[in-house]
Image (cartoon, rainbow, N blue to C red; front, top):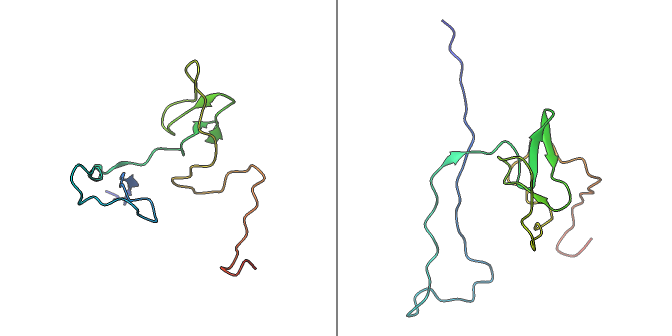
Length: 107
């Protein structure tokens, strides 16, 4: 009998204050951050993409996806929040992105 180690990648939604923090949660009537979410299995793809033909492909114009479900047309009078919202990656999306490092001095 052979044993295999199986690793299940998990994720969790955690809410953090936007920095710089300007709200005081100790004031009367203030809203608290929601609690951490339960751990769940990572989706196969990042938001705005779907698993197709062996890899994650971006959704088309006026489509959206949570990374689990196939791309779907946006409801009438809505549009997707476009941009890269990478949650996980094993390879960088091939879309002509250029990555560079800068120092705090801007060099």
